[in-house]
Length: 251
Ligand code: NAI
Picture 1 (spheres, helix red, strand yellow):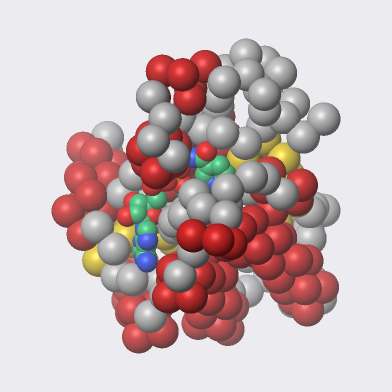
Picture 2: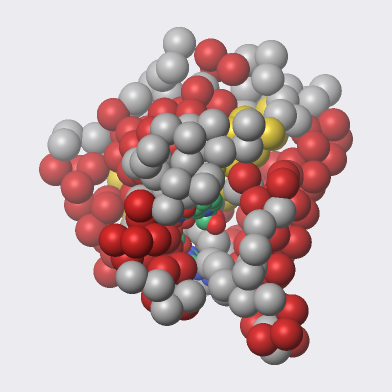
């Protein structure tokens, strides 16, 4: 049941990390994939990998905080593959600061890329989705429990988790499910960037056990498996949920 045969899926932030791993897994599960990212070359690279494996994918360069780009990403799915069944809103950024060191502009950018994007992508995608459609939004363990030195990020991810619940209620009768996946520390370029922002040595940062009962961070592929479950008909009675994938970090 964890299959997406015949389905068309959009993955935002598909050039890197969790987005790339999920785009590859969606394709392996039978989907035709629209790989969207502000990093056009990275999106092309992911799409190329998918096509080389014998599946179908197209890359779109776009900024998901901009409405015109969101409209274009959604249209690409319909124009290229004739419909849209799965939307993975995954693009995101982080600023590792307390309130003392955060400019208002930086606050706005984090909220635009992490929250406004989910609103805009859903605004343009939902009208095209029919019964069986599935939206997965990327929250974070820190959207549920909070975290240090990341005030804008924590606020943005809490918004994603609750916007997901609101969307789920609004579109349940139309047969469109909306869930959030909430990763803990996952070994991607973003995690390395966090170490840089905090001026911490990567090895020490990666070895920090505070949030990691299993003694390690997650892999992008482990998050992708949870996204595939939520996206597929295997999760047909799951909507409005916040699925935590963090190796016990929230426990
Ligand atoms: P990443 O940095 O490897 O990938 C993020 C992708 O989003 C990049 O390809 C980037 O170019 C793209 N992106 C950034 N701004 C964009 C914009 N305005 N428009 C379109 N694309 C844009 O990061 P990672 O770790 O794969 O993160 C994916 C999601 O998972 C994010 O929403 C992040 O907040 C979330 N997450 C990550 C965790 C981690 O430990 N890595 C933990 C919890 C949540």
